[in-house]
Length: 130
Ligand code: HEM
Image (cartoon, rainbow, N blue to C red):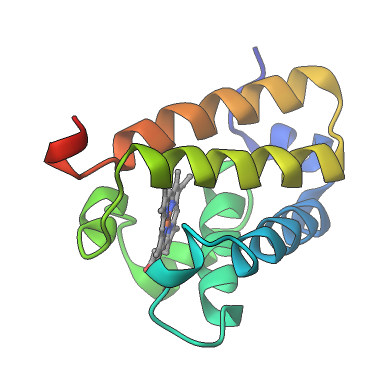
């Protein structure tokens, strides 16, 4: 399976592809009754930008995320938000829709989707749901 690398990043279309993916995802978040209330800021733009920079870095693109934010520590950064199974499922549903919208070639779609499923499980932090 394709792995995160500069080749992966370029093969899926580089920064423009990640920009389109997170734009589609945040369009979904904006209208999601489970997810939207979790976001502290009225303007989702800055959150969209942080997520875009993180994904670009993770998949082999520019390291701007860490230059601006330091080590990702994603579980710790999600600790202030209640992420139970309903939140995880809503997040993955919105991400699936966003990925369908950008329609990557199947092997890249599968690699990225597999990562999102594992990462979303990792972010669950609500003990009542575990
Ligand atoms: C930030 C929710 C899963 C990556 C956030 C924020 C919320 C949130 C409310 C704060 C928004 C902000 O940046 O101001 C959730 C929920 C998830 C989830 C409900 C359900 C499982 C994920 C996954 C990833 C991810 C799977 C990575 C693949 C990020 C990143 C940030 C973030 C990079 C910004 C971190 C920073 O402050 O630099 N998330 N998230 N999230 N999330 Fe998630």
